[in-house]
Image (tube, rainbow over all chains, first blue to last red; front, side, top):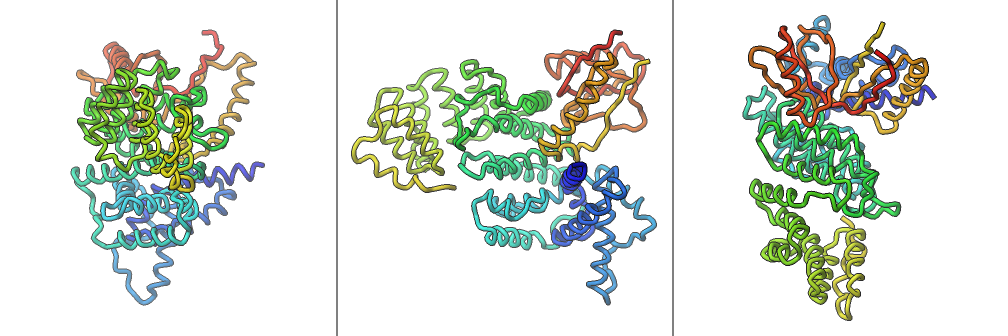
Length: 432
Length: 123
């Protein structure tokens, strides 16, 4: 029994140390492949050494030390006749400890990790490449896990990651210490990808729930790391808070048969109160800065849901105001649509319908638009129009779960009339 | 004599625990706490939220508020208060009251609690 716990503990320690260790190794070796290989070897050594000698106090420093030495040996073997050209390897074994201490000096290690994250989230990569590379390299998820999360085959995912690595392996990738401005650009690029990672995990597609949850947890873990490195950034606090407040509902979002449960129908006793408390504390801390951004505003909206002990206790007027703020900060039809949901609660279906009618053009391919439009029309007693809207929603559904939701609403107004069913065909088998 | 036992560990490792590992670790500690409690020896137990939720108030003529935990090594942990506060602003105001009453330099780190059990010690 003890062995099992030790093994689990070691794996958690390796997982925890991975970003910091890899980040330093990337600096030593210059490419992701070499850094990963060195880390991998050091991890194997750890699994055999730690049980005998006991775990090191600083797992990351231990791994960096071992990986670096092994890596240099390997490099020497490979380049037998070449003189090592790089002064990054100049340190002799004797001053390795001091060198390590220096390298791990806070500022360095901060920029090391930011560099690693930034390389994986590089603006030249597509969003899916950024996510795949970050999950593989920084989080250490297996290709199989990532492939399952994105519903593609292993081979395709492997290729996606390889291509992404090639793309970022150019030598011009800023290894110098970034200045204040570059640092803040990198930070915001990384935050965007972490936000995407979380949303990918949170997306309401059916099946693979377990893998999807892993994405949310990894996004939270990396954001926590980022926030520890940059503790004074309200946007990162807001992002962290937003993720925590959303993820706190994970246990109530999926029912026993794997279907999504909407916020209003969720059993709130299943919400993770500890995570909510931390999310609220961070939001409070972020708001002290009086420097609102979209992450903080979204977190504030999530906080109002988290604070409501029942759906009827929800502070919809405040939620509407926050969506209005969000619209101002980041104009988008999807945000207006969300604002209209709050308007439905505060002013009723007529006002909400007025608000979303101008969005018909820009959201003509958006499932939620037609779902909500149908809901409003049904509430206004315009059943035929509602049926048409629900039909369009079903045609646009990304998963059977989404389609099932709409069908339930359709049933409530007497189902499809003859001829309407044509819309339905596309939706039945499609998954994201 | 009352003793405080302060817990230090690597956040990066602890926050990489799975839910099951976390539960196992806490359950083991709970057993020890139960024993102490039965002997009437257990005072307040608190688990702090992660350092990312911390704010530091630097004492001085004009106190300065900094995000993040207290990170200096020149000063040592000398004591703590646990205070009910409505918000971080309220907690900072409370800490400023302490700062004004205190004649030394140094700092207060303000950190929300994740778990609190008052214990059963009589003073």
